[in-house]
Picture (tube, rainbow, N blue to C red):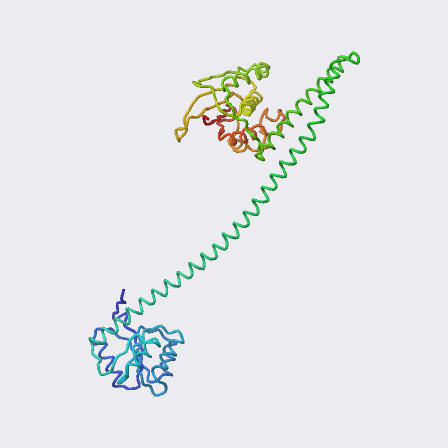
Length: 408
C-alpha cells in the first residue's frame, strides 16, 4: 500500500544538484504534483553522503554531474553504505549505456531534466515509492523466512539429538529389563531345586518310616512343609513373571470350556473361602462356553484374580461373572469379572497395581505376604492373548476386576 503523505507527514526528499535553478524546478514540480514536501538540499557529493548517513529520506534526487564526484559513483557509494532509499537520477544529457549503468548500480529511475513536468514527476515518484515498498516487504519476508529456516534447522538438530538420546536410553532400558529378567530367572531356578529337595525331605520325614515322631516334631515338619510350599509358589510367580516380561511365554492354543474352567477354580478355592466364611458365587451368563486359547494360562489368570479377592476380603462375598459382549469394533468378546466386598483399592493405588512388585500398603493388605507379581503376571498374559484388564474400586467398598478377551 502506497504511503500517504500529508502536511504533518510530508515527503522527505534529499535533492542533490549543484544548480540552484534545477533544484528549484524539481521542488516546484513536486509541489505542483501535490506532494507535501520536506526538502533537504545538497550541492556536492560529500555533503550528500553526510546527509544521507545522518537522516532518513523517502526519496533522493541525484544529479548525474556533480562538482566533486559523478552521480554514478555517488550512487554506487550510497548503495555500498547500505542506503536503500529510492534514487531518481536527473541529467541534462546521457546515453543508453549510462541508463543501463545507473539501473545496474541501483537507481530507481532515470529522468531527463528537460522532460520534468508535475504529472511526469508524480508518476515517477509514485512508481519509485511503490517499488521500494514492495522491495522492503520482500526483504522483510525474506528475513522472516531465513529466521524461520534457521529456527527450523536448530529445532531439527535438537529433535535429532533428542531422538538419539531417547534411542540410547531405550537401548539401556531394554538391556536393563533383559538383565533383570535373566537375573530373576536365574535366581528362581537356583532356588527351585533346593526348595524341591526340602519338600522331598519333609515328605520322607512325614512317613515316619525311620521311627515315630513326637507331636512337636510332626508340627515342625508340617510348618517347614507349609513354608516351603509358600516359597515354591513365590518362586513360581517369579519364573512366570520373568518369562512373561521377556515375552518368552509360548501360548498353547486349544479349545477349552471356560465355564468348566471357572467351576474347577471355584472347587479348588472353595476351602479358602469357607475358612473365612465367604460366599463364593458364580454368575455364568455364557451362551457358548467354548473358547479358543491357552486354557492353562487362562486358569492361571482366573486363579490369581479369585485368590486375590479371597485374600483381601475379610467378610462378605466373592463373585465370578461370565458374559458375552461386543467391543467398539463390533467384535465378539468374552468378559470375566471378579468382584468382592473386600477392603477396596485407593484411587492412587489403582494406577500402580498392575506394575510388577507392587503391593497394597493399606489395612489388612500389609498382613499378606507376596511378591506383588500376581496382577503383573495376569496383565502380561492378557497382553499376549490380545485381551485387557481393568479395575473399579472404592476404598472400603470392594473391587471389581474386568477381563475382556476376543472370541477366537
